Length: 233
Figure 1 (cartoon, rainbow, N blue to C red):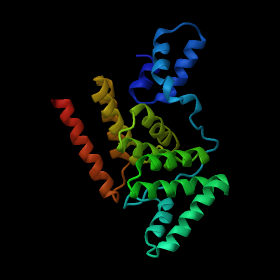
Figure 2: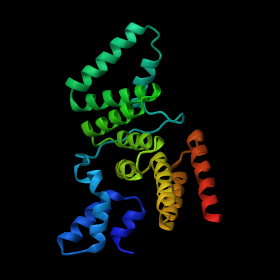
Figure 3: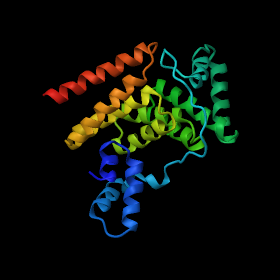
Figure 4: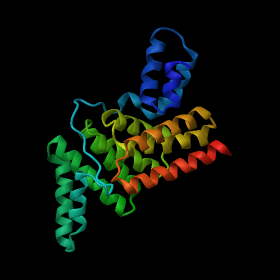
């Protein structure tokens, strides 16, 4: 199996896309052409690229991140006018602040939309967070996780998960999400290699899950049981 095909079945679609382009530059390649045709409508060439290596946020035992504290502070506000003013400030920051603050503002707004059941707006905000701060794995990972939760195409979702793993390879959550999307690809395309790589991803999730991450581990274990059902049925 070529590197390009291995990347595809492992859900590393950005790497598969780049390898397919490289192979086509070297001459006619039917397989590379097929992959590029699959990827064409997803605009991978315009996907945000990291600009620097930074220290990544660490998930807490309760599945939150430091970046979520601002969301919780807003949720705790009981006065409607005060809440409205805070939201207006978030919107103002998203338009006028520096790139890092813009990204955090969109991230917070994404969670607020999610809690209000405005799912498309939520995903849009998380994608904007990625656009303004393309070095932060959390923004990619939560964008991908939310997209997958609301049934976006795996070809839209997986590039966000792939990038989150590239930037933050010790985070169990991203491997768990990778396993979920690969399982969906297996169901959609009936290709065994997706299932095999989903198992590898869930093993990486278990390996990287800390002892105090009890609730995350519960979700990972549930996914593992589902994978076993596919394997043995």
